[in-house]
Length: 219
Image 1 (cartoon, rainbow, N blue to C red):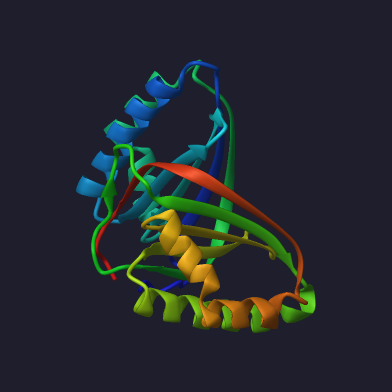
Image 2: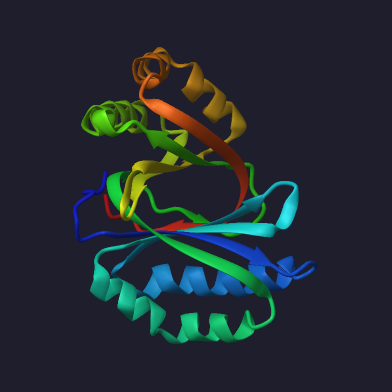
């Protein structure tokens, strides 16, 4: 488990790439992300995925120890090379700063960069203003229990959009679709869902294909 304190930098990137450039994007991204986690002490995790039916719609979640670690990353040689290689490939890039609310993964480093059967969800929801604290308490308790009891939940990060505390984002990685189905069928998850549904004003779940998912074993 990681501390979701104010020093941690948590970012979500929504990335559109030109048609027929996915392999070029993936290869460049793979090299940049793997290198970053390997040699940058403050780069805790990098998670890249894409929509199953649209190779031009890609996502990247980043977790850094602090602002200095983030600055070190964006000034690094591998990131600058990636930017150069992506000239004309990335057509739109929205970077969203997230305020960490819960962060955790299994006590083993992820090092996934080849085709896999991982089940990766991006959940975005609006939580009622009057129930922010209650929702955080409920989701934290549910996820702490899930990580402790279910080794198939590999990583989960929860944040709220900077300046938009009602807008919640959950990024979760499961070993397989079966692990995900077992998770949502678990009585603890069902109780959490029932107890919080009246606070959730809207919810969007995107299942994505994991491309590069790497982190440090820094629980």
